[in-house]
Length: 342
Image (tube, rainbow, N blue to C red; front, side, top):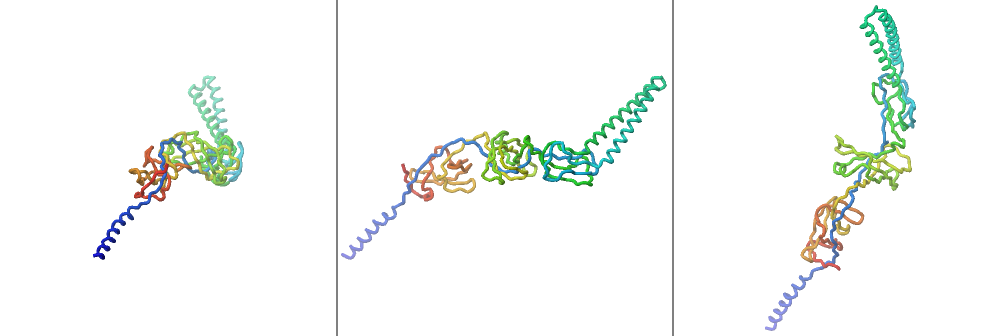
C-alpha cells in the first residue's frame, strides 16, 4: 500500500507541474509610433544626354557638285565663316543665260515702244513685249538668288559636329552637308531626358533641377526645365524634356551622360512612418507590424511610395493614426506577445 501511494503521489506532482512549464511565454518589449499624414513635394529622378542648345543642319539650296568643304569635324567655327561651296560652272552659266535673255527682252521692249509711239505697233504688241521683259527680269533674280546660296556661311558660332560630304560628291537640294552645335551663351547646353506620362504631367517649365554629370562627379550643376514635348516618341512611348544648365565650371561636350533630380512645384499627401518601422522591403513592397488586441501584433503589407533619409512614404496599406511597432521588429512574429514601453 505504501508503494502504491508513493507512485500515485509522483504522478500527481508531474501532472501539476507540466502545465506550468508550458505556460511560460516570452514577452517582447517594443516601442510604438503613430503613422502620420504628410505633404511632400514631388521629386522626379531621371537621366539624359547632354546636347547643344541649338543644332543646325547646313545644306545647299540647289544641287550640284561639291567644290570644297572648308571645315572638319570638331572644328570651332565663327558666325559668317565660309563653310562649303558648290562648283559654280553650271550656276554661272545659268546666270549668264538669264542676263542675255533680259538684254534681248530690253531691246525688244525699246523697239516696240518706239513703234507704238509712232502708231505702227498695237497696244497688244507693246504689252506682250513688256510682259516678256518682266519675266526675264524675274528669271534673272531667281538664278542670282540661287547663285548666292551655292555657298554655305555659318549663321552662328559653334562647333562642327558632323561632316556629311566631301569635295567631288554630288548633292541634291536640301541634302545635309554639315551638322553644327551652337554653343554660344545664348543657347548653352541642355540635358535631354525621357519621362513617362505621369511624370510629364507633374513637370512644368521652369522647375528647378539638380544635375550630376558622370564627367564631373560630386559637382552638382544647377538647371531648369526649359522645354517639354507635347507628343510622345512613337518608338519608346516616352516624353522628352530639356533642362538648361547654368553655372558649369568645366568644359562640356555633346553626348555626356547625366543624372537629374527635378523638384516639381507639386506636392502629394502620403502616410509617413520612420524608416526603422519597415520590416522588409522588396521594390515598392514592404511590411510593418501593427498592434492587435492590446498585446499582440499583426504583420501588414504596405506599398512604398518613396524612401527618404529618415522616413518612408507609403502609398497604401496604412492609415494615418495607426500604431506601428518601432523597436525589436526583427524579433517579432504574428504569434508574439508584446509589452509596450513607455
